[in-house]
Image (cartoon, rainbow, N blue to C red):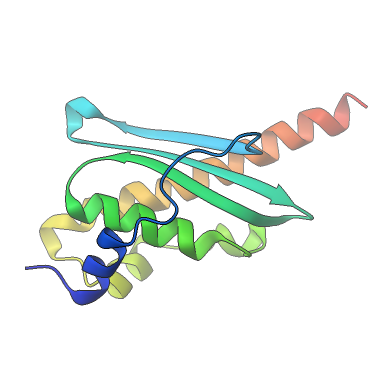
Length: 127
């Protein structure tokens, strides 16, 4: 049985989809593993203005993706990097056998921010 918080995020997938002109993207997991997360962000003034996701997986994976996208919006990049899987586990009350969903989400956050920083650094050095 899932928590009310997890079910609310599973049923309220307001951030599902893709971003045109995303500032950065991250792709983690695989369908073969049973879970896939594609996270996109749009950054303005070092703050995440929008976050969207495409996900394949169980209800806990879908809810975790929605939770993360909601949480990321309006956060500075430095704050986004501080999100941990333990916070996600606690806030969504993920059962122990679903902790991998939070680990996938944490990795996606770190990867998308790193991808943004690498791309942004390349752009500034080419100017």
